[in-house]
Length: 418
Image (cartoon, rainbow, N blue to C red; front, side, top):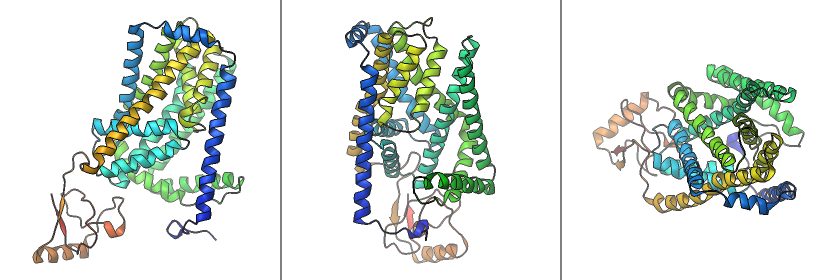
């Protein structure tokens, strides 16, 4: 017997212990994987030579690297400003992105925890759950599109430079097929509600067959999730697909530039490893982190970058030094910035204001005439869906913005004084 989403059995103490044990085991395995990768990766590297290369950096070279790294952090905020309605302010976008990135880079399963933090922060700033979900989904979809598209673009550029091997052509064709398939599915989902439902049902069937191999119960409710995703994203994508695409591309390209400049400062010339080959290795490293085996891709990214760049013709010591600097600036620096941002948010959260562009409201008891008018409106006007529980939905009047739920115990007819 399968339970529905509204009939989930209450969690038991034994189930909670099993979940915690499972998380601990996964965390330990992740740590073991990181240690094993670094051991086999670095055992043939002369770190005295690597350190000498790093110490040879000039102040100007260090300054350009830090400037690019700082710009890279800023671009994360631009993405979230483009996917939120009303538009998130730059300061709040920086606080949210740095805090969640720090968690994702340090804790196993940090990406899921980061999403929970995103909901918590957005709720404190006055955003409804549905608006937050739309922003999370759209930013995630665009990020996946670019991760799939970059390897194809990079391999095409490498081929234009005359370095097209048979394996690279096959990899490019596979990547192109994956990207086109993802775009087709996305377009079909947005095309109509019925198509979105069918896509969800078919995807659920495939997923159920896969999870049954691991003795897990079949999945349910995917058709409802795809329909909700469509309804929430059609309007946003229709109005903002250009800024969403541009800001997402800028974020990925900025990250790539940190790696490219680090390589050039370390002495890895374009004759050894061309900028297109660096882009190809970078793109595949980004793709390798699509499944978070380790926090922030620790160990996995280093292995792909060093292995790929050395195979392309780079000196091992110089490549290793460049990759370590790149990871310090794009993995370590966000952790420090995120800790500062999180502490600042915790300090200010108690006095947080409503979402950007919305006014602060206070509940106001109605007059007798107002109560009669409210009950009359309620008899024939249905409030729009906005991610609230049925008990929280407020009477809707044309021309007025969505207002927060009334306090517990408020009688029918209460309104908000803004």
